[in-house]
Amino acid sequence: MKKSEIERYAERIALVAGIIQPLVTIPQIYEIYSSQQAENVSLITWVGYLIFGVIFLIYGYIFKLRPIFYGQIIWVILQITVVTGILIYG
Image (tube, rainbow, N blue to C red):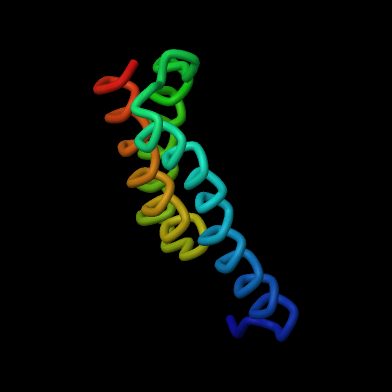
């Protein structure tokens, strides 16, 4: 089945959003590592994000959902970075 123009456009928008959305985590990462403090950052929350991020990463891979897959790759990397910062500086 051939994708319609609207479906292709929606997929491109979702792919861009899936890549940009995780990047809003960068200020949190910068704050943790530049201040070397993570006492007020919840380890449980970020480990939860990481667990569900891995689930969605696998889901996106299995079903070949590029926006989810590529976005989750970025999310998981950034979540690991936050969790590592919490463990080091928390």
